[in-house]
Image 1 (tube, rainbow, N blue to C red):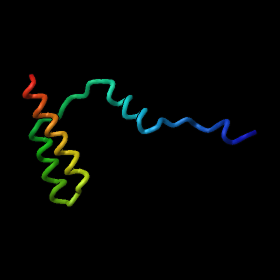
Image 2 (image 1 turned 90 degrees about the horizontal axis):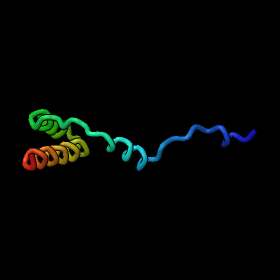
Image 3 (image 1 turned 90 degrees about the vertical axis):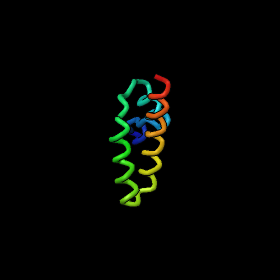
Image 4 (image 1 turned 180 degrees about the vertical axis):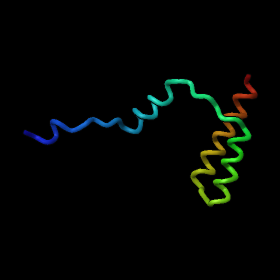
Length: 66
């Protein structure tokens, strides 16, 4: 038997992102996101800082549209 015939299929990154973005997710409060941004900045987590900045921008944009 070939080992490749019984391998478990794993979703690709794109498939996982698409699946996660299908459902509506609750948006965290601005205060919670800003606190996360402060922690990421204090610990030197550049990726975390960038993620928090984009999440804050998305939150502000959604509040402005509402």
